[in-house]
Length: 401
Image (cartoon, rainbow, N blue to C red; front, side, top):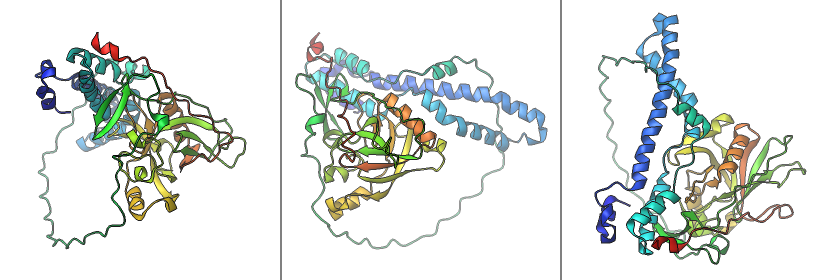
C-alpha cells in the first residue's frame, strides 16, 4: 500500500506525514544489514593488506577487487543465513494490510499500527549474527579507481520486427477468482480473524498469522539413509523420503505449505496453472547444482536462503487441458525455503524454521538428491495426519481497548 493510500483515509489522519512502522523497521534493518557487510569488509582488509605485503607486485586494484569479490562470494550466503534483518516484501504488504483491516474492525489507528508491528516481525537474530555485530571495526582497504576511459559501446544492429502471429485459443481462460479455500485450511470454528486484501485476493489472518499453519515438526532421517529423493504430497503438505530402502520409504520429514489463499495445497488444475498463487505442480524436480553446498543460495526476492528446484517432468498431464499444461510449464521461481509469519507461498515449499534448517542440511550434505511432487498420498500406510495449529490467542475485542 502506498503512502497516499494511508493519507486518503480520514480515520487514519495521524498516519499522514509519518513513515509506517514497517517502513521504519525496514530502513533500520537495511542499516543493520549494511553494517554487517561493512564489518565483514573491514575484517577482511587485514588479509588483503598482508597479502600485498608478501607480494608487492600483485597489489593492483583489479586483484584487490577480485579478492574482495571472492571473499563475499564465499561468505555472502552464510551472512544472510545468520543475519536476516528486514521484513520480506510480503510481510510488509501484510503488515500494512493488517492496519487497514484492524481500523475497519473498529480499532484506532494507533492500536492498529501497534498490533500489526507486534504481530508481523523479523526472525530473531542468531547467536552468530550477534557475534558479528559486536566485532570491533577495522579500517577498510582502499581501492584505486582505474584512470583509463572505458571503450565506446558497440553499435547494435537494427533488426526489423517480425509480424506477431496471434495465438490460437486452446480452451477457456484460466481463473481462480471464484474458488474457495479448502475447508482444512480455513479458520477453525471459534477462532477470531480479520480479512485482508493482498494482490487482489482475500486472506484470513488471526494474530497476524494465516489460519491453520503447520506445527514445526521434524522427523530426522536415519543416519544410514542417503541418496534419497524428497517426496511432497500436494494435497496434505507432507514432506517425506522417496527411497528403494523399505526401512525408510515414505517416512515423514516435515510439513510445508505450497500455494496461496484459495489455492493453498489445492490440487485444482486451474490452481496449478496460476502463477504466483497455485501450489507446486506434480512432477519430478531437480536441484540447480550437482554440488550440495551450492544448492542453497540467497534468493533476492525472498530475502533468505533458498534451494531452487526445476521441473524435469510434469506428471498427471491427463488431468490438464492444453492451456493449463502450457501455463504450468511456463511457471518459474520455485524453491524450498523458510516461511515467515503471515506469509504463504508462490508454488514454493514453505517450511517452518526448524523444518527448513533440517531439510537444508539434507540438501547441503547431498543426501537429498531431488524432489517428487504427488497430488495424492503415495504412502498412505505410513502417512500421518497433518499437524495443524487450529487455536489462536487473537481476540477481536483487543482492538477496542
